[in-house]
Image 1 (cartoon, rainbow, N blue to C red):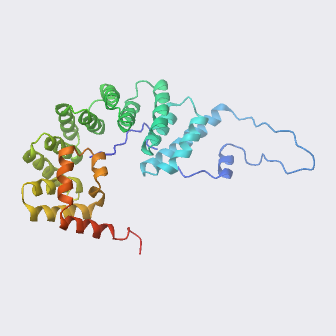
Image 2 (image 1 turned 180 degrees about the vertical axis):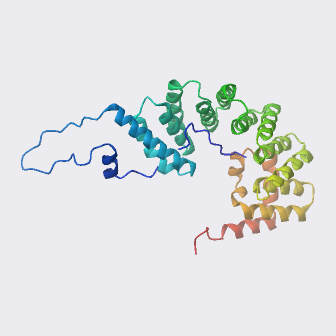
Image 3 (image 1 turned 90 degrees about the vertical axis):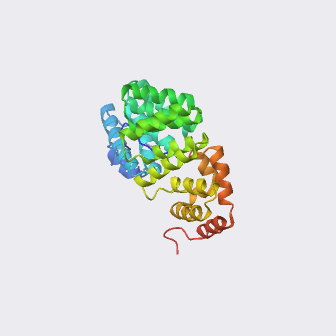
Length: 302
């Protein structure tokens, strides 16, 4: 599983109407009425401090929207904030985080590098940089950035979890498990860490141990579809078809996305588990379940 953790140094937009923006910048009332002759251009004199304060206000609004995962709404304010307060690391840090969350990873890394240049010892910036490099498939760079952040601020569960994911991709399985375990020690509700230990163990052929891990994850969150489906796959592989079917159907009813192999790969399911999952999902009963769920109207639709 890829668990979305939030490391924004601010935690961060609704597009601002032009009139409201004019008021915010002190521009309202500055537009002259049309005249028959050409008008000389009017140069507004705005204090740089006033502009910076406006930028910081915008970044606070963006941070509030980010807390509610309103990334597309937050983005324009964050972009404008970097123009109004270009020497403030928080504006670049939040903009970089938003770019990463909206899959604009290259722009995200560029903005985060600017934030780091302004505030080199901020662990939150390093954590988000690590996430950005992970999304770009540069797993060693991801490890390097997150490790630097943890040296400045140890025992951050989300960062430890992301570090485990990066080590998992590098196939450094012992390192991955150690980071997942440490993340779980810090936050006992972090079932994705236990879940991902199971993913590692399954790839190593330690099926029974993996199933125990997934059962632990479900004990933390009984609506966790991922470990539920993983257990179903393991049960199917060892011939417990009836139990596997019941659990697998429940898992997909909770989250149909887990029927998509690409989604599973994105969530760190390895080759062995993917192969066994495809065999399970191709059974007539599971195909019928998937078809029925896919035919259901989306929530809120008639």
